[in-house]
Length: 287
Image (tube, rainbow, N blue to C red):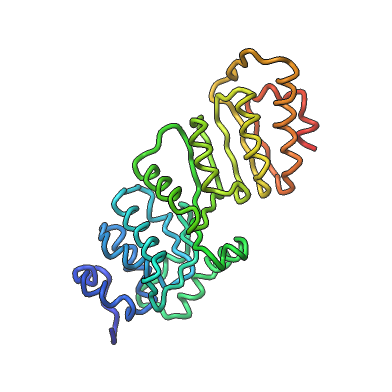
């Protein structure tokens, strides 16, 4: 395509033509066109654009404030296209799919901007790529999220988590902020099979777990090496009773929980509410 770039809303009226010429579209057109396609739920175009994305990062989170299953499926289908050996778009540079709902200057790029403006806007995304392990950068595309985990997921979240479970060996999944609201044990196991706890920087734990359950969770808790902020609170003022447990076993559970805090060299903030069993151990918790 040559000459002045037409408005994106005009482009979307010629979806088939755009899809066949993505390799020739100016790079600066992609952000505005993608936003328009996302808002209009042009799923076929979304899928093709993700597969041919010409930037290191696709910060799609701010566009997903109102989850829609069809657009999510199109987004993830585009990632799947990149995983196929037969598909090698010439300009595709995507290394990070960022699904966190946070501000990105990237989406302020106008379709009439020049390439230098576009490159400066993507600086933060390139820095984000550098944060992750070098071996992961070389081998796998990264999917970054913030998660709120409970016993009930909406259709979009359930679809994403099921999709992620099936691609553990093909993609690198990273959760930065995690909120846990009393999910079943199996859900916790599934989540940490997908997401390496090492990358969690903020954890909010709101549960009615007993000490035995908390002690079991401690094995995941202790691997959160980069944890900076933690919030612990039961859902109700009184923690669930521990049935048929000896004082010695209870002491072992408490020790297993508090011993994890020594692993957190990056920890800056601890918030606790009604966590009565730690009352006598605060010196150990705070180091």
